[in-house]
Length: 147
Image 1 (spheres, rainbow, N blue to C red):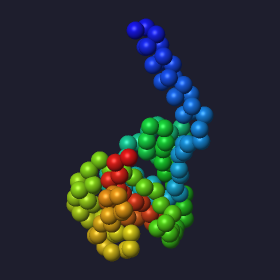
Image 2: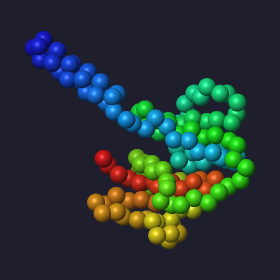
Image 3: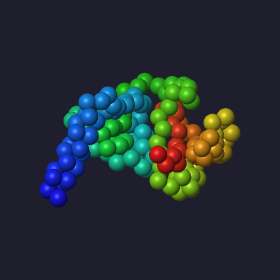
């Protein structure tokens, strides 16, 4: 029994070592005009949790986006820009319908992949998705993927 537990522990350790030696996303960063508006959106609408950031200058907010990845929101942009929908960040939510209800209550608009307002796209494979923009115009996809 001890040998089995040792082998199991060794396999788990080697898997963790292998994962550490692969390229992975650490963080993405966006440059915003108004960090308070961005914070309200990413905290209250998207539902991300903040993590400590080292600057403590009121111009940075870091959000956890996964076990070992973050979104860095940085204030300093002079104006809102136009972005392409195909350049986006995607978040999977635990309850797609609850997320839609949250958007409706907040009066936040969304669309399907083709731009039809308040519509949902169903991808091949059954994944539902919507598209919305944050206060600075960055595109986000929200889906219910069960990977």
